[in-house]
Length: 222
Image 1 (tube, one colour):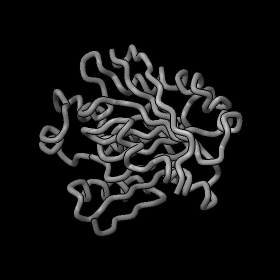
Image 2 (cartoon, one colour):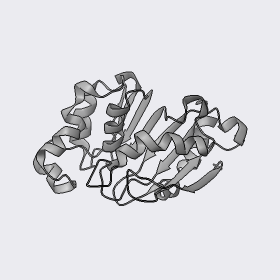
Image 3 (cartoon, one colour):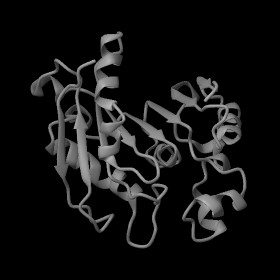
């Protein structure tokens, strides 16, 4: 399956005190003028990865395949959030603030999401990025859809302390999606959860899907 237009931008983030990559992707066959009108889905990468890793995973090809299967065209935007941040603030590095306050302007400058002022309409997160996508939805409160794949959710502080960079229990409890199922910031009809049964986060993902009433919850071997 061919990839569409993929562009890499270097953007200065005050929220992250860094110069992360922003990678934009549009389906094959969509020109720059048409791309301006597309809704944007932000892609949040997993731990020890980056925006570039999402391209290597095949997101541009998956995007074209989805559109060719009949899904209305949309664009993807992947941005660096830090390799072990869990997409929340650690000191002067605040990926959520970057997503909320800086990303819309960057997307507008890149010629995407202009009807929505560059504000993403959806989020897709993998593992750590799944955690971040659900935190983003709760803070953004205007997303139409969120898809999480093997979301790194924690059923206890002991597990969170082992896997994540949370400075203390209060910090984790304030962001953990399983602790805020009644306040997700998105309608359950726009929520999808996918996770393999052999995945270490399987039990937490299944619990989240059940308690949230997610429209899609698929748990297959793998």
